[in-house]
Length: 185
Image 1 (cartoon, rainbow, N blue to C red):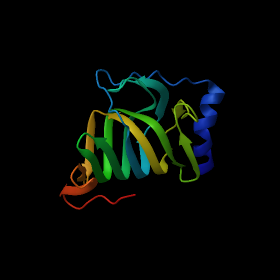
Image 2 (cartoon, rainbow, N blue to C red; image 1 turned 120 degrees about the vertical axis):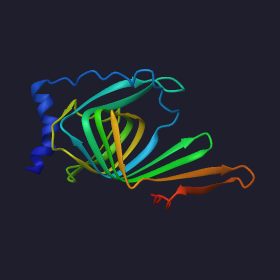
Image 3 (cartoon, rainbow, N blue to C red; image 1 turned 180 degrees about the vertical axis):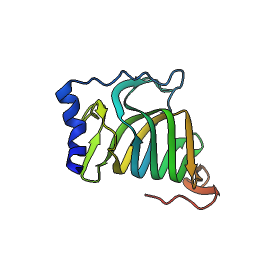
């Protein structure tokens, strides 16, 4: 059964010629200059995933990305690191739940399908199949994420942290105002 779940995302679209729906960039939203890095022990979509490659508006011009569209998804033991003007923001959660019109824009996405076959997807290299059937999940995921949109977002066990650059010291100082620091990878 597991091998069928791994093979279906590749075989089904190729055999049936199913095109993924065209995904439109996130309206008037511009993505950040640098994609954030996200890691999760398990990425579980609810229902099928439709994938496409689009140009996403960013503050420095369009960026070619993979867009994953689905009705919902959950990420277990999720950690995010994003660069900003004042330093780096760190976010960690036990579970992140995205519901509604979920769109995840990625420049790179790697993980193990059904915990069996590990792959790395990118817009220019190995692309995500245009249709991924329900019940397929990924483990050991690392992604370069440009933008995520959803109707609702739920979080369990949120921890935030800020790493600020110190001009006087020439180094970074970590400050975690909301509980313990997320573990570093």
